Structure formats: structure tokens, C-alpha cells
Length: 168
Image (cartoon, rainbow, N blue to C red; front, side, top):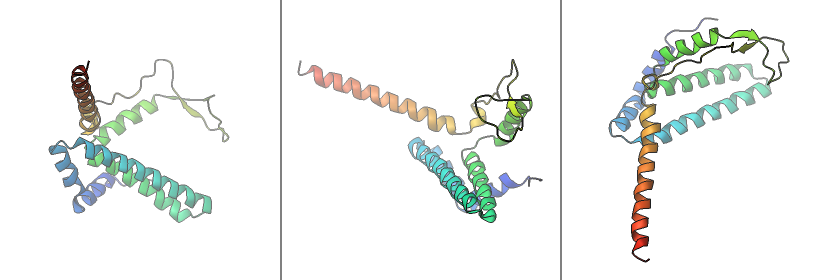
């Protein structure tokens, strides 16, 4: 099997055609992290929905729909990385290199009915070093939103403490 190296480019073209890239860029520029976090959740739900459809096609023995579903999963996953400006190529290489440092063996924590070797982490194995830079705008969405929420919670608690002190 060979993979078409233009997959990411094709998905990027699709996002531009439908205005999705511009929309995400505008939301990020305006620091609308809540909407972007909701959009990420929507994309993750989309993956789950597509997986369930693919699984249903498998259960029916519909090979064409299984292939269609697997491609749709890839499109959504790669597309999500693209929209959130993640450096998918660099992270792919890091994860691949890390996986290649694993050794064939047996993972006793799960059944292996096929007898194929598991990927076992050897002594001293270190996982891939994914940096914040590799994660595109996700740190803004996931970290800053949480910091903003914590700040709001503290401000509300402070206001409540002041309000309650008036009645003591």
C-alpha cells in the first residue's frame, strides 16, 4: 500500500474552499477560545460518529463502506490537526521514531488472539517529545481557556466573600 503524500494538502484545500480555515483563524485572532474548544469537541464527536458508522458497516460486511469510513476518519483526524495548526508532519516523525524504538514482545495486559508481536517499550525507552509549538493553537484553546475560567472562579469567589461579609 502506498499513501498519497498530498493528503494533508488536499484536506487543507477543502478547508479553504469551505471557509473553515478562515473561520478558525478569525476565532483564534479574536481569542474566542470557548468557541474553538467547542469546535474541537465537535470534531472529536464527529470522529466517534464516523467510527460507529464504520463499525456498523463492518458488522454488516459492507467492505466499501468500511473503506469509506476509514478514509473519513483519516480526513477528520488530519483535518482537525490542520485546522488547529498542529505540526502533524513533525509530530508524526517523532511518534514514528519513538514507536520504532520499541521491541517485538508480549503485552500481558491484553489478549492477543493472533499471536502477532506487541510493541513493547524496552528499558530506558522514552516517549516522543511533543512540544507546545507542535500543538499549534491547541495550547491557547485548552490552557488559556482553563486559566480564564480559574481566574473568573477566583473573582466570583472574591465577590461572594465580599458580599457575604456585609451580612456578618
